[in-house]
Image (cartoon, rainbow, N blue to C red; front, side, top):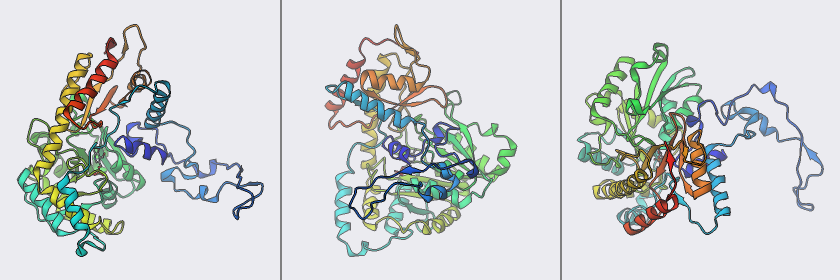
Length: 463
Ligand SMILES: Cc1ncc(COP(=O)(O)O)c(C=O)c1O
């Protein structure tokens, strides 16, 4: 999907969870569609030349309903990331001499640290690292186990309780395949990284959204789930530190999740992609809580904490039965990540200074941004985790436009001030600011913030 590629640049890959009910690929009844002939023109004289009108490709009729059936690719709706992209283009055209202040991109802004790159260089030349990795190599699993033990006091058997995945994203595609039959329910916190929800639907399952509301401190209301939903629920997907709210979990919340999972027979999948970015406290793993290992797994990513975002590696840790079944499904989907990358990641996991450096950098940047936003009247508070800052969107500007939703505010920021944010309207209007902008030194970061403040000097926001 085009939307998927755009969204990836902003740290997400599927938009439907942000806009419930506006699935870019609704599955209409086949019978209702009539295909119009279209005309194709090929360069005369080439072997592909076709004269006159031809029917639209028969392939269009073959698409599965899960991606829209015959109407696949024909939606004219414009999704939020496309709107942002267009507004960015317009801002560049309108103000060619004005730099973009880009808080939109949800991707780390630097390369993996030197020791990790050096470890890769060595591993690339090792003959042992040629060939399929299949379901992974022990050195990486052992390094993951050491990381979990050192940082969380969680003791795991590397062979049976840890499985590598090609980034954590595929884990969210494959775990529903392990559990979801048609009609089964995935309990899913929103806003949230949407892949597990999308795959639940692909498999004929049902996604039951659990809104993360500020008034509930961004925790889901597990007690408010209707009994008929609970009866069909098989998995619960949670994410802490939470993206985009920046909220971290508490031990009490995780204990409650374990009790809930046991009571209702639900498997817990905790998305720990941002766990290294826990600010002002020791990171808390779900697996630290007694009983967690009986009810689920935690999915870790090398992308964020070690700046290995394009390297594609993660690991699933926890319940050995879940890990085994995931391995069986995964084995039918991919043949593993290049062993040299796993060896480099093992070196990364063995050096806690690496994720600590990344954490300090993003905390510093968030602190600077909170200060600047507060000076502008935003009710911005320091996030407990992630590299996102999630703040209530302004309702308008004194003697200026009114913003009916976050998207309107975000569009104004881009078009009028060349400042990029990502709007969220699903639980009240919010703007997400990512501090992954490019700035080589602390002085550059300050300069970036100065440009931001100066650009908004004199603007009186209404909240
Ligand atoms: C909350 C969250 N979970 C999971 C992922 C997937 O990360 P990766 O596949 O790079 O490990 C992302 C990436 O943006 C994310 O933001």
